Length: 378
Image (cartoon, rainbow, N blue to C red; front, side, top):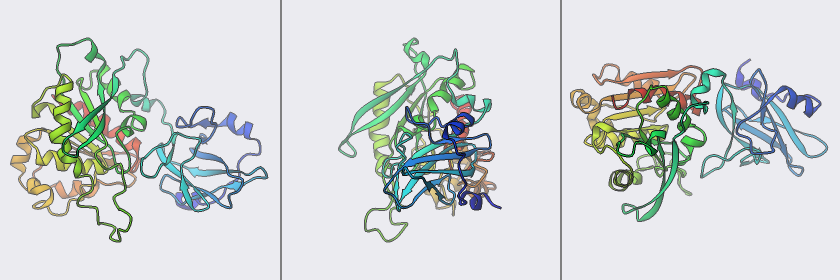
């Protein structure tokens, strides 16, 4: 039987909640004082929702068919999933057909709030966890005015631990974008990029660098109310950010922080739609960037003579200006393999990475970031 079929089967929870709590683990995504969601050694997830007036409650998690929860006499709905893949999984509650976030977890996304459960890795996941003895960098919230869009905007900026003590040193910069519907907080809340950076820098596996995260104008639906064509916003989605990036954000970062201001010391990467943004911005501004990271990016390569201004059909120029081009994706179904195939005989130099057992999710992107960072600015 497939995982999809198993996940749709209503499975009974153990009779005693106390026994369940004693034999399962609380998700790290839970808000304080919340005991659910949980998971067991077989990676089955357990959900509990109080909704006494509801007629039907489901959980949509990890891209599988919604799980039906069962109601008790007190109006508490509970359910157990089939085994889930390792990693960080967004989910929503469906209460009488309405999709809402679970109040038991922190909330993610911006235009349609969702919850998350993390099925934790073992020690192999220590690279994204804070480690004893490792100096901690800072993540700062920086507000700035963008003339391009006539508005105040916010970026989150990571600075390495040594930034505070080596006051005459300048640093290279990685601009790191999130995916559709997420915002500038996603790489810290779900991606734990600050821990990844701290640990790799401490291990001397990557150079100390500044990392900038902005909303990219994709923290909103691609489709607007009344749009009938599902691809109506495809060509313009997030493009209002491109002028902001080059005319406002980069100058602000270079003015505010001790940066190295040339293309050899500037990189851009992104996940999902942010990966497409990174590709479009870098290939249109190769005088400003020389590194590209595409993590499950929606490149959707069809015709190398036309895609991204045709630069991928000019391998000599691309390879001369781009020092490192990374394409990473989840091996359990994701954007990426078709783009890799399209580039295989193009003459374009790139590094392909497959995350084993993961799909379009943050464990894939944490792994991609870990693989990408050691190749920058060397």
